[in-house]
Amino acid sequence: MLRFLALTSFLLAPLAAAQDAPPRRNIVLIVADDHGCDTGAYGNADVKTPHLDALAAQGSLFTHAFATTASCSASRSVLLTGWHNHRTGQFGHAHDFHHFESYAHLRSLPMLLGKAGYHTARIGKFHVAPAEAYPFETVIAAQARNPVEMAELSREVLAAEDGRPFFLYFATYDPHRGGKPGGFTTSVDESDQFGNRAEGGYPGVTPVKYTAEDLQVPAWLPNTPVSQRELAQYYQSVSRVDQGVGRLMAILDETGHAEDTLVIYLSDHGAAFAGAKTTVYEPGLRSPLIVRKPGGKPGVVNRAMISWVDITPTCLDWAGVPMPVWSKAEQAPLSARLPQEGLHGRSFVSIIDQAQPSGWNEVYASHTFHEITMYYPMRVVRERQYKLIWNLAHGLPYPFATDLWISSTWQQSLQAGMDARYGPRSVQDYLHRPKYELYDLLADPWEGDNLAADPEHAETLARLVEKLHSFQAQSHDPWRVKQFYE
Image 1 (cartoon, rainbow, N blue to C red):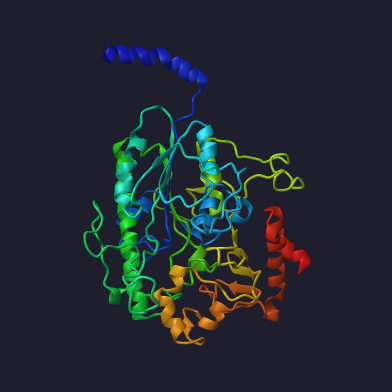
Image 2 (tube, rainbow, N blue to C red; image 1 turned 60 degrees about the vertical axis):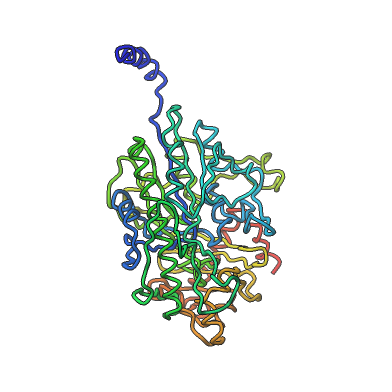
């Protein structure tokens, strides 16, 4: 039998060489839900993430990676298309009464990889619509709060021997908030549980619990015991994600695909606290990005400024799939006047192993909705030093996601009054924002000193406003009309 197999391989070798078949290039894209840069590898000494830290040691950790919007559905549409969400049409949440949907003419990452011969599979949180625009060949049912179980259920896809490369979209529901024990309450005495179970836990998961009073509170949150208690729950949920990543990496190794699979770990955006999620402040947009490339250098700390619009181009580049371009005819349902259009992002495959590559020094952000009641369009340009936020509907009070509104961290400050502090700003300033917010991030990393009205920074403000206007034009932003009519 062995001789027959050897002879068969020998006879088929010339045919394979003639076809010049590319090597198998698999992709695993791991997307956590509401995970800020809170791992040991990112410098958080409190949270225990040995598996994510090991992944960073084996590959590249990106220090300046950014979501384009700190909202779940909108961000995921960007990850899976390479377009900003104002162009995908996924302006906000897809589920329930929110009912935002992407445009049907999208060529999404799973669609393009599927047409190129990939086995596309997803497990866990989906949260974009319509499903036809994001087609996956295999949908694996799972408890998305148990990443260890999710990893085990993914084994069949990773171990398949049909000769096709695979694209696994592995999306946890952790460390998203998970409700208070008392239900929908604004009590500051009840911390959100972040999906943690007081009894029983999750099969295969070893709970990692934290002592609240031992935790350091980041500067963008109120430094109070209330914040510490919620951080303790959040970190426990992060550690659950970490265990799932560890199990998934072990299965990749067991199935023989550790050396032919591009692994990307990221979060849809920052942590589920007011001041991060739903905002375009640094804790909302700046997110973890860890990439392990077969044959790549280990332990790289990469300072390139990466945007989530770059994820789809990077995956396509790795897979050897051409970048899509839309013709005028294909865009006719939207506007026949639009020129040909490609992706808004670009591949970073060639710079994964570099510490400080040139030409990666700015990113843009675009947020419009979170929930249906949360209309607050913001556009952002972020350079190494300066960041400009344009609040297009600045006359409105800043709206709140339901889970953030009832959070004890926010309620404690709110109940203390408009002059109370919430991290670097007052409650009043958080709720009522000016048209422009300009920050010098080198001098003011937590964005507490708005320089937009400072005459000394007028030139910088004008320069960045023009950049935002150009960004809107180039990315076909419907909110560009604000420039002309107001």
